[in-house]
Length: 231
Image (cartoon, rainbow, N blue to C red; front, top):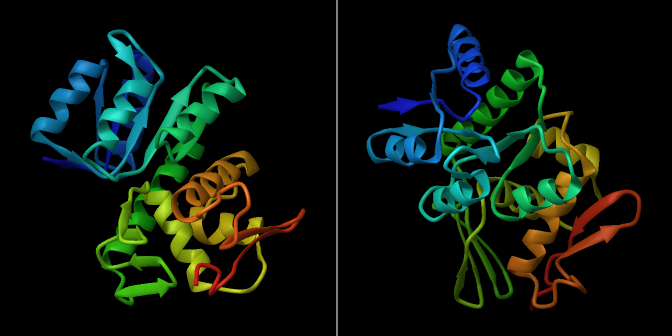
């Protein structure tokens, strides 16, 4: 069966309330209360997005995220009462697309989920130019693959979307606000989330991520994709 959203949270009351609320607004949602249940879910079902708690009774949300990322490239939003920067950095580094602190507003969370679902659904349906090539970097927008010097690079859905927006707007300043509006389509996204995704992209496509030549920082303003940097 196909769902819009899967909630994985060992706090059953919170998971059930969120699930019920989402379904009221036509976001088809299922809840699992453990890592084992979530793994079983994926053997017979599909989902467009995962809301994932860090603390699960029989495991860690971090561990489950890594497992999901081995085979699926769907948005993963962490939801947790843990609010340290270390937890947020880990969540984003292992493949999470966003980090939402508990307690959360059901309305705000639903808005975030709908934005993610619309954006990734639209990406699949929207015609794309087949191949972008810039020196040793090759981006296949149709098949959502990235290669550097012939080596395929694994990106999350959000990282790929961010890269596509950068290469479609080359050699000009792209402000953080513009990226939030056009990539995340979400005013609630933080600078920290963007910074982590930029760093992960640089690690994937830059020969020297600490001294990037393709994705350069414009201090206090945003970023610029420099064409021909890899030639």
